[in-house]
Image 1: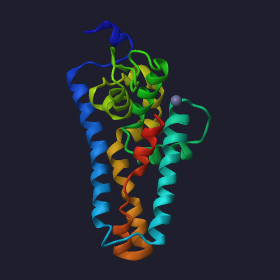
Image 2 (image 1 turned 135 degrees about the vertical axis):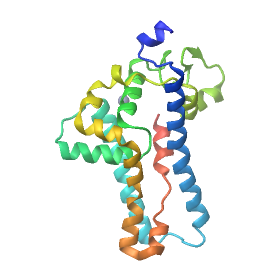
Image 3 (image 1 turned 90 degrees about the horizontal axis):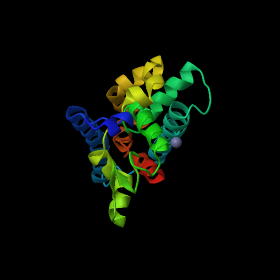
Length: 215
Ligand SMILES: [Zn+2]
């Protein structure tokens, strides 16, 4: 056991590290398959004005869930709010498919604690405790690779409040169910324009790439 890593709240246990990579791979590649399917279907089901409206409404809700919910509220506790809005922020934030809330909070708090130093989660300069020398690898690590070469954060150390809160705790435990509920645009499309509109509303998660660029 590496005492330095354990003290920093970083998990090295093989099974947990692998489970974290699997979760990341699924969260990245499942939406990506949906995006590719959207492009394949494009010639047969080109978007209508209804599709565009549906896309932007859900895009906006997901962005709010991420920026206001996961980042400002759950991680930094920048404001106070009631349980209904907390639940909505938790649901919309989970639609971005960036992992359960408690894991997002733990990773982000660790990032702030060690910003661009060893142990930062997604630094362009450090991969765990190892310095990254090449420019391209710095970009690649900060943008995407950290999710497949980095080590998970100890949620009990960094996100105890998020885990014990009944709403964010439940949202975290039901992460995949909430991800599945992001099929809602398809149902709205069906309600507004029948089967063809439902297929058109099978929108790609552009929000994912958008948020990564912020990091
Ligand atoms: Zn922050």
